[in-house]
Image (cartoon, rainbow, N blue to C red; front, side):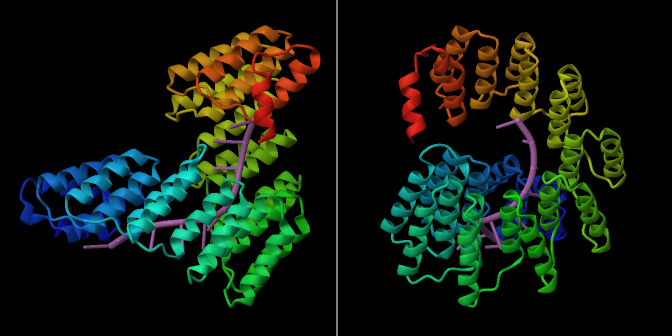
Amino acid sequence: MLVLAYVENMKTRLGFEAFKRAGDYAFKLSVTSCNPLLSALVKENEIGDVDYVYKEMIRRRVEVNVISFNIIINGMCKVGKLNKARDAIQDMKAWGFLPDVFTYNALINGYCKKGGIGKMYKADAILKEMIESEVRPNEITFNILIDGFCKDENISAAMRVFEEMRTQGLKPTVVTYNNLINGLCLEGRLDEAIGLLDEMVGLGLKPNVVTYNVLINGFGKKGKMKEATDLFDNIVKKGIAPTVITYNTLIDAYCKDGRMEDAFALHKSMVDRGIFRDVSTYNCLITGLCREGNIPVVRKLINEMINNGLKADVVTYNILIDAFCKEGESRKAARVLDEMVKIGLRPNHVTYNTLMLGHCREGNLRAALNVRTQMEKDGRRANVVTYNVLIKGFCKKGKLEDANGLLNEMLEKGLIPNRTTYEIVKEEMVEKGFVPDIEGHLYSISAS
DNA sequence: ATAGGGTTAG
């Protein structure tokens, strides 16, 4: 069977083409080749093609099974198409398949990852729905929830899920501990993170490279470079192979600490270890160099990156735009944005917001507003950061009425002000005697 | 032939 042969050889595109060529002869296709194809497409994030294969499987009357549905539902959840996932669950029921633990885990994971307010509440509701349908959650279900609460900066809720998991007789795994350690690290609670590391070792669980990566990241972010470096040395001593992420994490920490020589030493040693540097490696180094104003070496690095077969990505361009803006060269930054569009990269919210911030810092509100128009033409809607940048820009120019108008506009659009919004309004408006329409509203935000 | 964790920019 051609489709399966291609997919097994990691030639997903060819497998997909063979699927299309197979025509209407169902006997040529079976679930044993369609499911691996679906699975490969999901891994490559080709959700449009997943949708196509799914519809065609139904149309051609390929026999589908519960695994087909689970792969499709997981794919939709991974790209945040939660409503589509729910539709697929209706389809699977109509076909006589009941959702199982894979189906529910995919859906819970989708809600945990999608972000937005109340997402964990929804994830919790699905857990209840799952239990009511007599599908038992497994350790993966709990790991997903723990990670979700940690990313929601709700460690205490994550700890409660951790307890619940044990009550259910499920044993925590390395992933469970990694999630919790990461949550604590991101909150700067490093002592507690180390406490959990000891606890997991005490239980006979072996920390893996991810455990070390999250710890290195946690200590690095706090500027505790001695500890971060020791952890890195520990990995090697324990015979655990560092990955490109381990290197990137430590390189980034050195760069932020202004230790560019140490960062470049690591960058060099990656070659000796046979670890391929990726765009992130270069982006970390370029950020560090830009901060030092060392543009000649930035150029050299970009050339090296291209020679290694890597291409600058949106993040690379965002770094360069930010660097020009910080030098008071927003017009040059605008040209960098044009250049990225020319080579086929689509600017994201960060790109536009960064450039707008640069214009605002130079007091050029017109240019900032033009960028906003450009961003909306590009189909990127203004977000909270966009408004924060503009509101602060107008305040700095003494145009408090306009800033007040922007605040109202932001609320009308259903955007939720964040802590930065609150601080800008407090420092730039309220403390200067101007009372914005939504002052009371903002106080309730700052309280939460 | 199906699920969970780690790095970068405002």
